[in-house]
Image 1 (cartoon, rainbow, N blue to C red):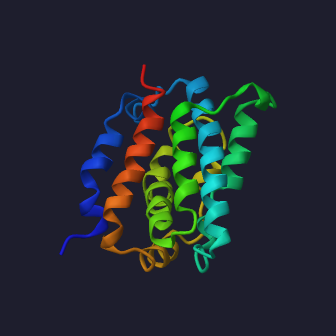
Image 2: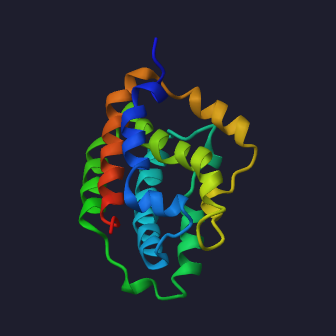
Image 3: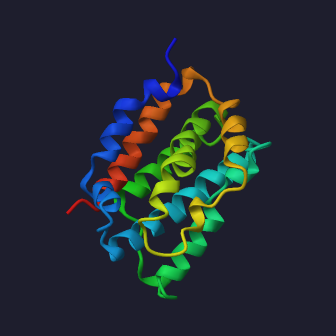
Length: 177
């Protein structure tokens, strides 16, 4: 039987192959683009975690939440100039979709899986390459958190997780130059 990771591997590869992500791994990301991207993530995570909290989806894994950490990272990198950022079309489309699934724990968990597990795994390498304090990648007891998150996952979430990757790829593409 395939795992959720295996069932989403093609989309994961697609996300990692985007020029914006490649520039991060090359240590040459455009700082202004990255700060704008953080602004998008700030809105996305606040929304996703708000919906998850409403249905107690993150019970037992509360320490996976990243919205406040992203807020801190963005605030520092934006140098107090937070009002000059706008929500991108791809982010708005993603937020509208999340609104339609906010009461569906399985679907919402697939989106938490894609975003938050990426922060747990790839984020550890990214934190060394990105500007700013990178609070969003600082977790307590990563092995335990990963284990507890995995207990909430199921391969039946693969289709929705692939859709989450599609939304995230669309967000990333806004920064490919």
